[in-house]
Length: 476
Image 1 (cartoon, rainbow, N blue to C red):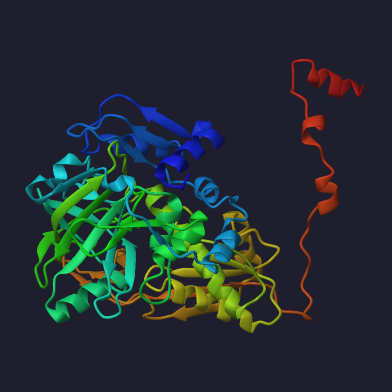
Image 2: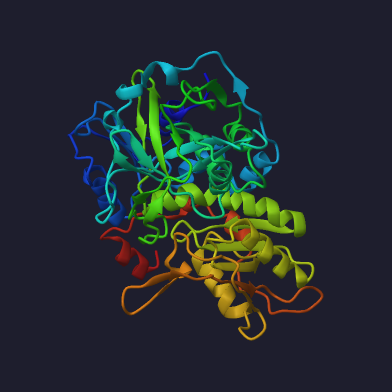
């Protein structure tokens, strides 16, 4: 059976039964569902949540499905320790999509005046959000010059019964396409696919060179071709096994006020006049599930982090073959840790700049460490900075690399009278590595790995009981 949202939910339920919960009580679409996720987040818990009843809609909602690296690793048949390498290897072997005659996404087709957004349980996520936003939809659009199809994850505010806002982050391919359509004075046809396998979602947010190839990237991550069907009212391919597709057009030059919306850095920054989509059709499975991302919280960060890690790993490996691991921490997608087996001191700069060029608008700090440091352990990375970093020689500043504006507050100047003006942002590269061979450096104090591997904790450790202390003291 082809993989999709349903097969992955079933996979999670079987492999991680304690990591998925159903909520049968009706919840309000305005903060009701996201409040459950936020309450769990306060306890550092991020299980998948399936809400069976959301007020005003017959469709169930799934949240937090892509909120942990463990589940994203499961999606590509890997583990958190090996997922970055696996992602990079799959990324190098794209699987082109295949066309099919029909698919479940066309079980129900609402067109014209029947295509009302109110049929969908679109959520309001955070306190200061301007209203309901589609936060888990992948927008499909076509390059008017080359015909290449691009897919990207953007936010979409409900502006009316059949109107959605769209915020294209400057520098992303979707924004280049939007600008080109406006230059030509043509409407931009779009389709928003909601609900598919996490491999499809990660393919949509991967940092790929040039326009297009997201469907092939998704196929590589899923492990099979993405099935495509022709949309009903626009000349675009859409995933046949998506849960829901919203079709429409962006009128050239038209604008409406959009936002505010709590974005993945955890702030409100980018509201203003934006393009919008006039909805022409909504198609869906007969028993559709509405997939959403908990915006500005852990899921919003994690979903975008593994694709960045895989892309960074692949790009760094092109210039530093000794790259070992890459981590974009789940708590901060603005930072990136890279471990390398260093053969020359120049490799640190090459690795750092390769990472920055993968994500220039978002990465603020790249830390490069030796291969004896676990980049998935913040404590070890900080220890390396404390013992191997000289601030006067090992800190590289990359001014203006992030451009101006964007989603993070560091892309703006904030004046005393409430003014907010875009400003270029910068990033740093921290060299927390030892000098390259043949330089000598004090060794780390560690227990021999062979001795650690021989320890059988289950056989050695016993519960401490009331009699344990007397036994210890008696030396018996």
